Length: 106
Image 1 (tube, helix red, strand yellow):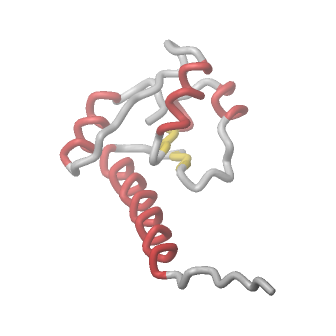
Image 2: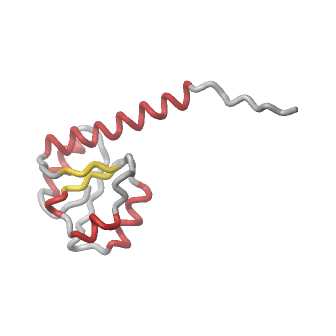
Protein backbone atom coordinates (compact mmCIF):
# COMPACT_ATOMS: atom_id res chain seq x y z
CA UNK A 1 0.00 0.00 0.00
CA UNK A 2 1.23 3.45 -0.85
CA UNK A 3 -0.29 6.45 0.81
CA UNK A 4 -0.06 8.71 3.81
CA UNK A 5 -3.55 8.56 5.34
CA UNK A 6 -5.81 5.90 6.80
CA UNK A 7 -2.89 3.50 7.20
CA UNK A 8 -4.21 1.60 10.21
CA UNK A 9 -7.73 1.19 8.83
CA UNK A 10 -6.51 -0.08 5.47
CA UNK A 11 -3.93 -2.47 6.90
CA UNK A 12 -6.51 -3.83 9.37
CA UNK A 13 -9.05 -4.37 6.56
CA UNK A 14 -6.48 -6.29 4.50
CA UNK A 15 -5.45 -8.41 7.49
CA UNK A 16 -9.10 -9.24 8.21
CA UNK A 17 -9.17 -10.81 4.74
CA UNK A 18 -5.96 -12.76 5.27
CA UNK A 19 -3.56 -10.47 3.42
CA UNK A 20 -0.13 -9.52 4.66
CA UNK A 21 0.37 -5.85 3.94
CA UNK A 22 3.20 -3.36 4.11
CA UNK A 23 2.88 0.40 3.90
CA UNK A 24 4.97 3.01 2.12
CA UNK A 25 4.56 6.67 3.03
CA UNK A 26 6.16 8.75 0.29
CA UNK A 27 6.30 11.76 2.59
CA UNK A 28 8.25 9.89 5.29
CA UNK A 29 10.30 7.28 3.39
CA UNK A 30 12.75 7.62 0.52
CA UNK A 31 11.99 6.49 -3.00
CA UNK A 32 14.87 4.00 -2.64
CA UNK A 33 12.84 2.23 0.05
CA UNK A 34 9.86 2.15 -2.32
CA UNK A 35 11.95 0.50 -5.03
CA UNK A 36 13.14 -2.16 -2.56
CA UNK A 37 9.62 -2.90 -1.31
CA UNK A 38 8.27 -2.88 -4.86
CA UNK A 39 10.46 -5.80 -5.96
CA UNK A 40 9.00 -8.21 -3.40
CA UNK A 41 5.36 -7.10 -3.58
CA UNK A 42 2.64 -9.37 -4.94
CA UNK A 43 0.28 -6.42 -5.30
CA UNK A 44 0.77 -2.66 -5.14
CA UNK A 45 -2.14 -0.38 -4.27
CA UNK A 46 -1.54 3.34 -4.66
CA UNK A 47 -3.87 5.88 -3.11
CA UNK A 48 -3.24 8.64 -5.64
CA UNK A 49 -4.48 11.46 -3.42
CA UNK A 50 -2.06 10.47 -0.65
CA UNK A 51 1.30 10.15 -2.42
CA UNK A 52 3.80 12.73 -3.66
CA UNK A 53 4.09 13.31 -7.40
CA UNK A 54 7.53 11.66 -7.44
CA UNK A 55 5.81 8.32 -6.77
CA UNK A 56 3.66 8.80 -9.87
CA UNK A 57 6.84 9.28 -11.89
CA UNK A 58 8.66 6.11 -10.81
CA UNK A 59 5.80 3.60 -10.70
CA UNK A 60 5.42 1.46 -13.82
CA UNK A 61 1.78 1.93 -14.75
CA UNK A 62 1.88 -1.16 -16.99
CA UNK A 63 2.85 -3.49 -14.12
CA UNK A 64 -0.08 -5.90 -13.61
CA UNK A 65 0.53 -5.87 -9.84
CA UNK A 66 -0.34 -2.16 -9.66
CA UNK A 67 -3.75 -0.68 -8.98
CA UNK A 68 -4.19 3.10 -8.79
CA UNK A 69 -7.01 4.20 -6.49
CA UNK A 70 -8.29 7.70 -7.21
CA UNK A 71 -11.05 7.17 -4.65
CA UNK A 72 -10.18 5.03 -1.66
CA UNK A 73 -11.81 3.48 1.36
CA UNK A 74 -11.21 0.21 3.24
CA UNK A 75 -13.72 -1.73 1.14
CA UNK A 76 -12.19 -0.62 -2.16
CA UNK A 77 -8.69 -1.42 -0.93
CA UNK A 78 -9.75 -4.99 -0.14
CA UNK A 79 -11.63 -5.36 -3.44
CA UNK A 80 -8.70 -4.15 -5.53
CA UNK A 81 -6.16 -6.26 -3.64
CA UNK A 82 -8.39 -9.31 -4.09
CA UNK A 83 -8.72 -8.59 -7.80
CA UNK A 84 -4.96 -8.41 -8.31
CA UNK A 85 -4.38 -11.63 -6.39
CA UNK A 86 -7.19 -13.47 -8.21
CA UNK A 87 -5.78 -12.40 -11.56
CA UNK A 88 -2.31 -13.66 -10.56
CA UNK A 89 -3.75 -17.00 -9.39
CA UNK A 90 -5.63 -17.40 -12.69
CA UNK A 91 -2.49 -16.64 -14.70
CA UNK A 92 -0.55 -19.21 -12.64
CA UNK A 93 -3.28 -21.83 -13.31
CA UNK A 94 -3.12 -21.14 -17.03
CA UNK A 95 0.64 -21.63 -17.02
CA UNK A 96 0.31 -24.87 -15.04
CA UNK A 97 -2.39 -26.19 -17.39
CA UNK A 98 -0.47 -25.34 -20.55
CA UNK A 99 1.00 -28.30 -22.38
CA UNK A 100 4.79 -28.47 -22.27
CA UNK A 101 6.61 -26.97 -25.19
CA UNK A 102 7.66 -29.48 -27.78
CA UNK A 103 11.18 -29.11 -29.02
CA UNK A 104 11.72 -29.68 -32.67
CA UNK A 105 15.21 -31.03 -32.98
CA UNK A 106 16.41 -32.60 -36.16
